[in-house]
Length: 344
Image (cartoon, rainbow, N blue to C red):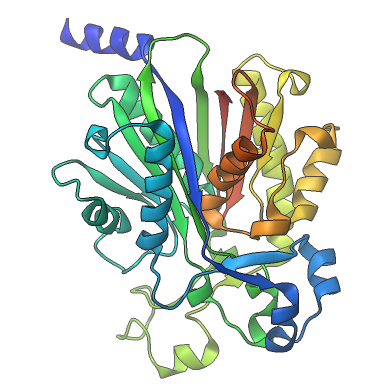
């Protein structure tokens, strides 16, 4: 009987996003600043990926610092006390340290001992993976308020030489937070989440070192440093091809699961890895460009933070209004991908 009651409770409860907040560092890095470092041009960067600028943190800032600032903004907008939070879920691929998880460092800065703090390491799909967890925990009825944070500090992890040009032009720093709470209202908040992966492509976009997967006894050595294995490596052509295919299919899957059409969706948030990818998906599915909300020109690729940054940006700009139906789709390293549909 207890199991049946738990199932009935999950079917009755849902989750909704009460408030959003975001934070970007003060330092703005325009393409012109990268021209000498990376032997490139503003025109080449804009044409290749659609980025005009990005934000980079100061040397004294950490990923959990960015997450903390975004969390404070979300709490302020939600108009709740931090003590109401009973779970923290943080998605990042650029942690403060290898261990413990960055969620624990954020928890310490928020001074919220005694509640679970969970790290999600699913790269560009981190937000949707984290959202799916938050939604499920809230549906169980055991938790009422979840702080979901996505934060990235890429600027300390990039090869800022011509060797790293194809990757280093893409990434920016930033964080976004959401306060999710339970709801019993039908057709409100998170309507569905869908997460997938295919590890056979894990080395198409990865950071080889340091790590325990090397034949060498060392997790990192001088030879690895000389080869630049401590920096991200990407097969750009493979990423582009798979991203367009998987994001297109995933959006259609999300629509089908919710018995919706593209025409019924008010705004679509694609992961902002490359403007050309978003445009290719839009063209393939014949989506009205006005429905696709792009922020890559301003932020660059902030990996896990990209989708919630875009959502918060849309809220602030007035583009995202209460009652709107929105879809979010991501694809990234792993390969991982996923989607979510929400009634704002």
